[in-house]
Structure formats: C-alpha cells, structure tokens
Image (cartoon, rainbow, N blue to C red; front, side, top):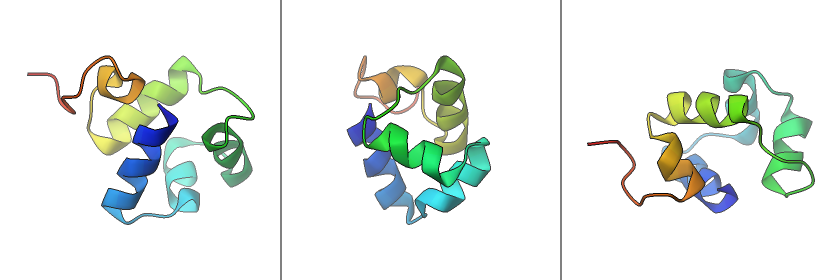
Length: 69
C-alpha cells in the first residue's frame, strides 16, 4: 500500500503536502501514514483511489491493474 502511494506521488510529480490537502489530511498525518507510524483508514483508501483515479484494489495490492476493467 505505502509503496504504491509513494510511487503514484512520484509519477504524478506532486508533493505530499498537496496530496494531504487534496484528500483532507494534515501533512503530518499523511507523513505518519507513509512512514507506517499510523494506519491508513478505509476513508483514506477511497480518497486516495479517487484522487489518483485508481482502484482501491490496486492501492491495497490485490491487483496490479490500476483501473478496474
């Protein structure tokens, strides 16, 4: 999960701050989640999937396909 989010951040060329603000988290909260100090919630999964336009299954590693076919 964390590695996929980091990969998407890098691919899109966005900052963690921008992502955090876009999905309704503080920058510190997102940082804690990306460093595995706190867990992503179901709400986080949905917000991230919507933001990156990928499936939740892709984010969680259940599939390697970014978008549900």
